[in-house]
Amino acid sequence: MLQNEENNKIISQEEVSDFETKDVEKKGLNIDTTAIREALLNFVFPLISLVVSVVLIVLFVYPTIKDYPEVKAELDQKNILKDTLQNKIGNLKKLVDFKEFVEEDSDLVSKVIVSEAEVPKLLDQIHQIATNSGMTVDRLSYSYGGGDQTGASYNTVIVSLGTETNYEQIVLFMESVEDAARFVSAPSFRYSSSRSAEGDNRLSANFSVESPYLFVQSNAVTDEPVNLDVSSQEFVDFVNMIKGLRYYEFLNIDVEAVEETEEATEEEITEDAPEEIEGTPEENPPVEEAPPVTE
Image (cartoon, rainbow, N blue to C red):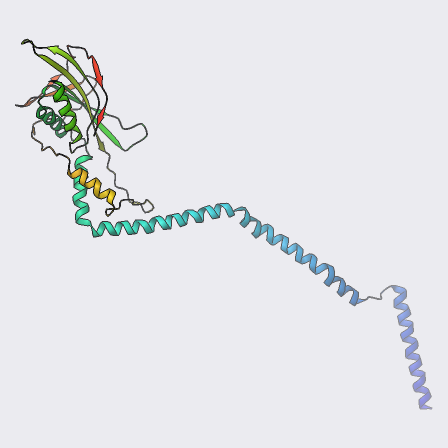
């Protein structure tokens, strides 16, 4: 009896289960989760990974590739700066080791290329060179010239020298200009022949003598190289050349430096004492112009 009841219950449960299954199938609610999971793994996740990769490329990789040339150029500049600073440190250490000799050499160079106009000393030097060559100084005037058109950091003093001389004295004057300590050059000179009252042939020579002076400016910089090697043979030869030049002591201490204005001011210096006079044109016109002579 009991067994029959249990069998009836089992049959009833199976009927109910079959009924529910049929009912669910009728309603279309039968879901296969395995297929959904496989679809997610095979399509959705790769698609999400692709989208994330594209976003990363757009936001990070592409800007890096785009800026690569600029970054590489900046890196190259940094490497060049590093090498420059390392060489600079080495050269500065040499300058410190040879400090005493560097100061002495600096004084010598400052006598060749001065940092100020020092017009009275320049006029006196040219006057000494002319008189030591045997010339008679008739006229000595000066003016200030502009720097080189390429933007060089120097200016010039232009001295106009008028003399009574001869050919041998002109050659000796040019040789003395080349050996003078302060750098001077004679870009041009003219001379004309005349006869004195005694019947002697004389030359009236006019020289244009120029001397540069530097504009000294002290600026603290770190990336500028120091190319001066005091131990190099080139530097040693340069210093020895400077030591072989002739330095003229300042004798005419009463010479006053007067800058020319619109009306040129001339200074006439004689062996006795200097005197400022107004410039006058040459009586004899120039007949020949010689090539420039520089130091």
